[in-house]
Length: 328
Image (tube, rainbow, N blue to C red; front, top):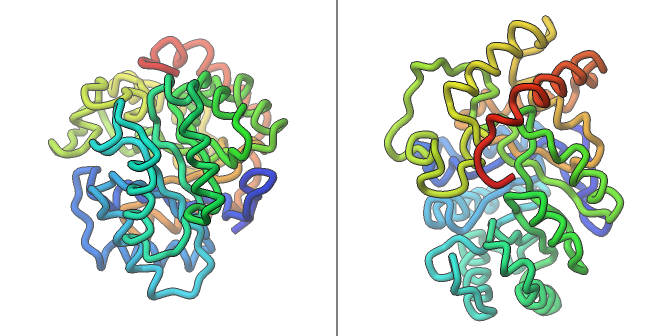
């Protein structure tokens, strides 16, 4: 497993991390502590040192499971969590007291004295512009409740706003083969400012695994069902904002015309992201140890050819871009 540095004043992270949304059972499958531990143990075995979670994943279940796991291992794991989407704050009840209370809850569930990284969790743009919330983060960092802070954002505009803030370690963004606008409009700016980039939804909610067909269905409590058209939150968080059937068409085009013979769709999709040097870490989720092993192995793959990169850029420009829905 190769490592990169998260932000100019940050810490080393495995370039493949682990997204832990699914440990909170928000993907239609309730994961037991035993299964969760198997996934986390395999991640450690594969050299993964960065776990990404949030207070709202399973209403604290994901954090609690990670906290229980941390008691069982000596591995040097950095855990990033989030603030800003729970009912006591979102969409318009943000305050320093609520922020402090949320951090204290996360500390308790994770069983740590200070959070490695606290990220604002896709909070409304107006609060990012106002900036007071960053003052609170700086204060709580001085107090030692958090070691670093960053922001998980939905749009390029929000990313650029956050990058103006002193002390911002990282941005978490949606970036994948189907969301390429960041290549020119955000990544160079982040690199210039020394802001780390954590990439969520690298497989576009599983679309880029190549395993789905137009007949695939998802459980009622899976966001790939209840948010497929943005009914519950930003449509971009589900299938990269693409209509599901359209996404399947694009995946089939990649399989037919672009996918190198020696790679799987997952390998192509994850390697494509890692080929961008501004990226610090990708955080694919995993519902089994086998998926963890497959994701981690991408770190050792060689970079994609310029022909493959050019073909994916062309597909995005000519077909995918205009099909994406939602703020981007």
